[in-house]
Length: 247
Image (cartoon, rainbow, N blue to C red; front, side, top):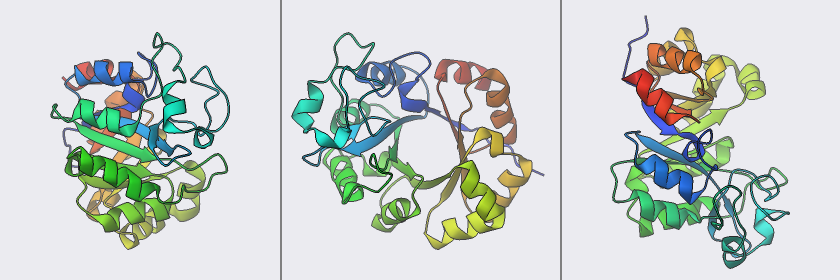
């Protein structure tokens, strides 16, 4: 039988249902809420700065086009994020400085480049930004690529490291295989889409000494289900709704 816990709520991309995703506007609004974690996604600029952006390209969420990695940090700051009234693309350092005075945890998803390959040196650069802000111990690093999260786990000093698994990998590995792989990489948490999480998964992951997190809990039914299952953390695009349902 699953032991119920009080799940932590992570504001996914700063609360993407309510504010422009991965924008300083979204992060400022999230920082006013009694959530537990603020989730973002990061890439590298052409000059090696850690950029807050979900996609590997600028096309969907900004007034520019092309790969994030093709522009310098200064050039990206001049690119405007849609819906923000003219804000530039934020750097991880900007977000870390905003969150540092609060009691919130950062949840940083390290993304792959436009070709689906890891950015060389991105883990080291993310950690350097966190260290400069005094935020390594208040950050959970997450990602879909096992080598990336394994490197973060080896570095140590983080609040946590989570390996995210999409449906094809989850089906290929199955539950025991996923648990074994996470433990082999020294990763302390498995993250799944909420549709893949049930009482059997929660119990098995917990029995292995790992945490269980999820994303995609964006509406009342899925949020209530995650609360009932007692997952460790769930990322939601509607943090005020999740807070209200958690009570």
